[in-house]
Image (tube, rainbow, N blue to C red; front, side, top):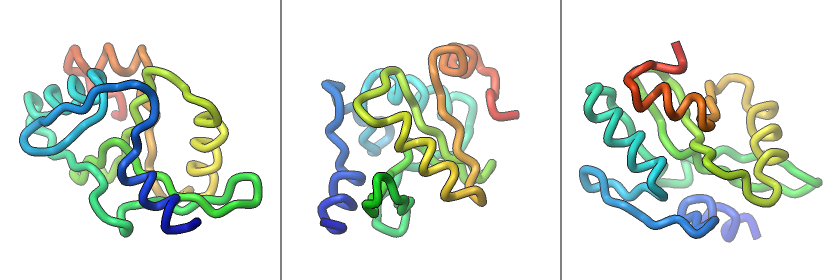
Length: 125
């Protein structure tokens, strides 16, 4: 089960979003694509999780699970989670991840932050 959770986190197919290629890196949905393009325009280095070492382990409802953030910005030591829509248990999942990893900076990008970021504002400053 643990291996399956890790696999699903790395290859999340949640929602009905399309996948896009931005500089050889696959991103899910137009919001992620637009953020990746904007980060490139702003010359901000970013990456996507690629291995199990990039996953966050967390416990929800007594079960050990794995979460893969949408973006990592090494220059800011910041993880971005892009949320155009909240699916299923996403809110509880993100609360658990943030609470169980207080040493990690995780910013949830919703509509307001998304629009500001696309205008060039660093919403994590």
